[in-house]
Image (cartoon, rainbow, N blue to C red; front, side, top):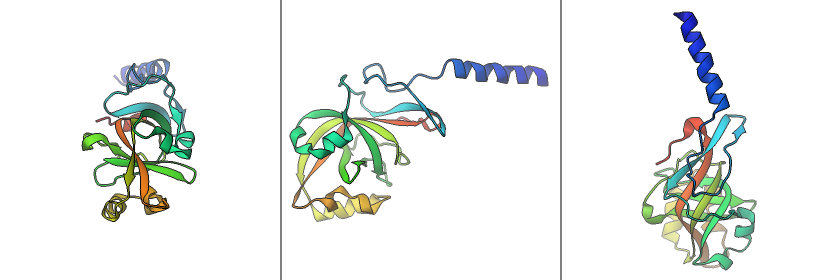
Length: 180
């Protein structure tokens, strides 16, 4: 009996290595293989609708250098999650260097995993220019894990930009693949 269990376990592990699970972001998303890092195999996990833009994503550093050029346009951007709403996962902050932007889930229609900070993400959404309101800044600050990363507090003036996401894909360890 023990020998049979050991052989079954060996076979299962060799099959998993030879045929890793496919990414969960669907065929319509830009092609990018799952990868591995120090925590093990990684896979794209989709939140919200499937992405519809099939071209390569804009680098977050390029987008954040001048978000005004993208206002009212639907874009696909790839970068790093810097903060996530710790109440429901209904917003996140995309950041590269000292530049950042708030990402809201469209109509609060979905949430992302609240432990996604530091992960690579792809976001498809519409860029909006918006007036900063003190009560909204306080609200975001109350839900933030990193209060130093509040994009609205870094802006000089009364206007900021935000990305209203219809689709978010996050590269996560396979054991944390909890797409909603």
